[in-house]
Amino acid sequence: MANRRKKKISALPAVVTKHHLELPYKRGEFALETAVDPDDQKQKVTRLRRKCVYDEMLNRGSINQDQRDAAERYAILCEKSFGGSGDLYAKINLLKEGIHGHYDGPTLKQSEAYDKLFKIWEEMGRYHRDILNMIVLGNMSTKEISERKRLNLHYTMGQVLSTFILLEEAMKDL
Image 1 (cartoon, rainbow, N blue to C red):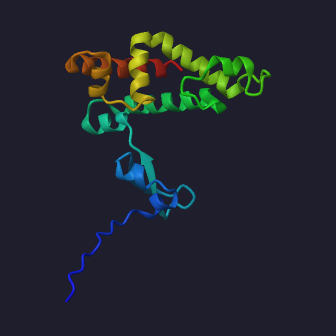
Image 2 (image 1 turned 90 degrees about the vertical axis):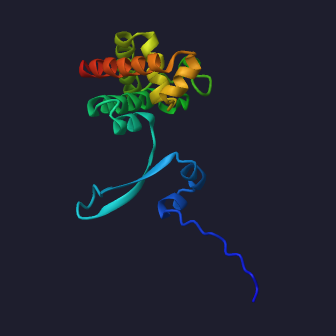
Image 3 (image 1 turned 45 degrees about the vertical axis):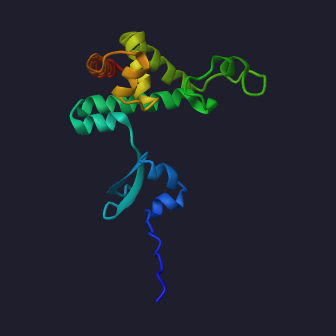
């Protein structure tokens, strides 16, 4: 009898293989989520959701649901403001020169999003804005932020919490 080694076959969910996201899924960047289908309330659908730090903070109880929702709204505002530039920090020269050398200008939705972002940033201050961008846009954990800023971890945890409190207050005003 031949000693055959059987390959261990890992069955990835169909939604992962359909969108060719095997490697990010194996790295733990995505989580499966089962929810009610918006088109058919009787059906449930399985979808991938990118894991983000503020969801993990909510699950641990570090922040509340309102603060998590404010972070999600902030991320959506950032996406709207970036528009077609593809740059998280939306380069000004793209707005000034346009993609093909002519001025296109921001769309109305981009302009409205920028207006809201500037109000949030003004209310939060530069220091807390940087922390917020590290968490929401950079998907950095508190430990990574403390290492990047060379601060004590416990101090950074307090600053992250105050950032979410300021974000929640700023979002209420919009």
